[in-house]
Image (cartoon, rainbow, N blue to C red):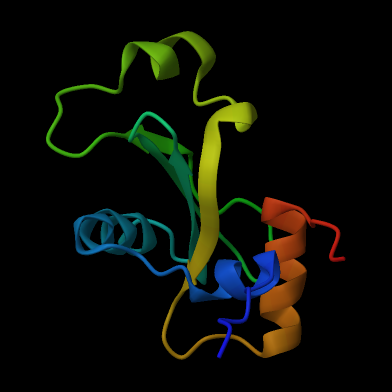
Length: 118
């Protein structure tokens, strides 16, 4: 039986925060009372960009760029601030309980953009 290829939308929905990202997410949400989720952007260099979002998809915190087990972000990120072209994965980690599906879809589209589905 052939394995069914997943669409980008299915893959995006399945992305979850890694254990190392959870502490950062919790800290961001703790400092962002209006935040209902944290946008997580993983870059090809291993650095990550995160920011809280509110119920309308607007920023609820500053953008934080960090790299696990490093004192600072990599040289590439220092030069280009984590350019869009180097993004490998992105998703939003919503608080529990999450908002309604329609709200999550609207926030995802507003914050991370949309991709065409074929």
